[in-house]
Length: 78
Picture 1 (cartoon, rainbow, N blue to C red):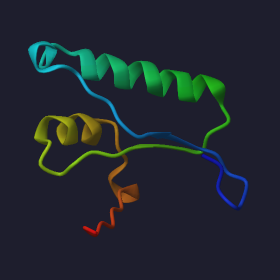
Picture 2 (picture 1 turned 30 degrees about the horizontal axis):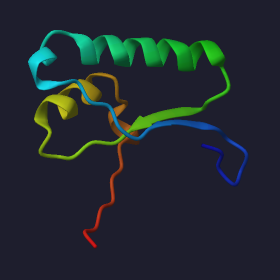
Picture 3 (picture 1 turned 90 degrees about the vertical axis):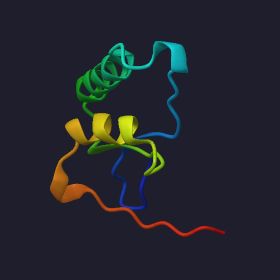
């Protein structure tokens, strides 16, 4: 995703692990692979992924890789 100021962000819109395979480390491996890729590419200044707040497992996973001072979320139902 290219910002108006020219900085690039790596954005993941959706990730799903089927229920039968959850809690087996697949989400962690996907995050680690993706973060390694983003770092190796060396052209993105920020990486982000969205999830629903009631998806507790995903929220915990993403929080392990987040910089707390950079987390900002604004949401509104339409």
